[in-house]
Length: 68
Image 1: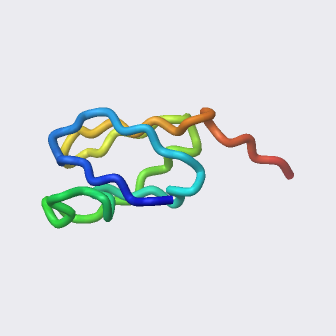
Image 2: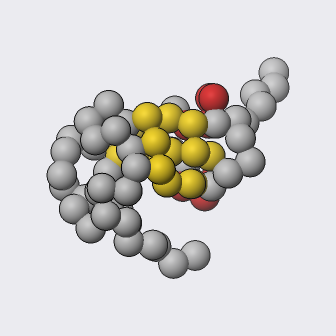
């Protein structure tokens, strides 16, 4: 799948399981070095908010069920 370039000003980005583990900024962002890399547990609740830039990531398909 081709990387889509996003401005760091985009506030909601939909991601898929292929993007896990998720971190912000993502390699596809134009200003990928705009703040320190932070890993976001988007698979837990189906969404995660970056504490640095405020970008909301939404996991397409929702949270991932964990079995034992």
